[in-house]
Image (cartoon, rainbow, N blue to C red; front, side, top):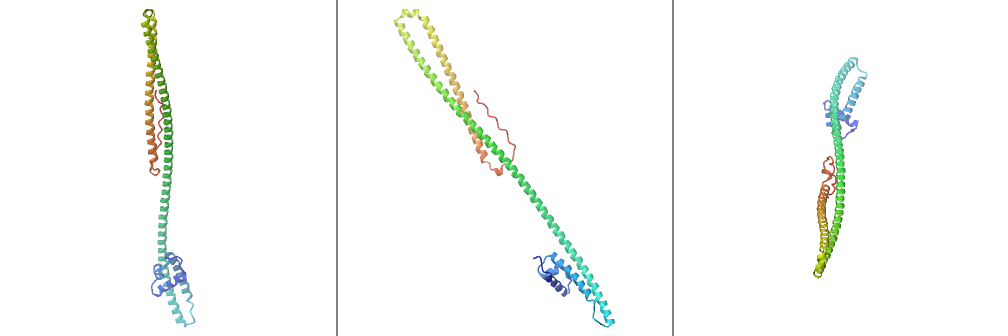
Length: 285
């Protein structure tokens, strides 16, 4: 219903209710008006009752009448005023009860509004706290991603260095093989020359046999040293290849972890303490 009903309309409605022989109340006046809030109608009804008492008091001044009639009329009128004042007091009491009930209802509504506001504030604080937790979790995730990226780059760099070292070792091995082959060819040529000279100079070979045997032993020892060096280089090459394969597998594992971390949605991540990143182990060998 609209608030702010004109007082003249309310007073007219009260007069209409009173004209039907009914005691004016807030609900009857509102029903007669078809609009108006209880507080507005109740306030104007109080004013109507106050003005009614003033009008009744003013009507005690009567025109010139016979003394007996005048006294009787005044007595009846005063009795009517007394009864009307009683009715007014009862109406005021009823109106106060309605106003008190309305005040209690408004207070209850205000309490509910305050409770809703408190719940809304608590919800907002909870949402802000959850947002802060999510931002912290996101920051931790970003740090983990950056850490994994740095580890991946370090492993890739070590892998490249291992590959370069492997190439260097292969070149050295190739050079040693070539040198060993050249020395073998030279040794074979030397042996063939010795054999040829032995066939031509049997007697001289007998005298120089000991020196030739000693020289052959020295050459043999040199060849054995070269062979051991070749085996050592082959062993080191095998170890280097194993380390390179292990570093390659670790790089692939870190790449998979980095991909999984990037695929986790930020809105569903739960906050947890950041685990310390395992320190990068030095390659063995």
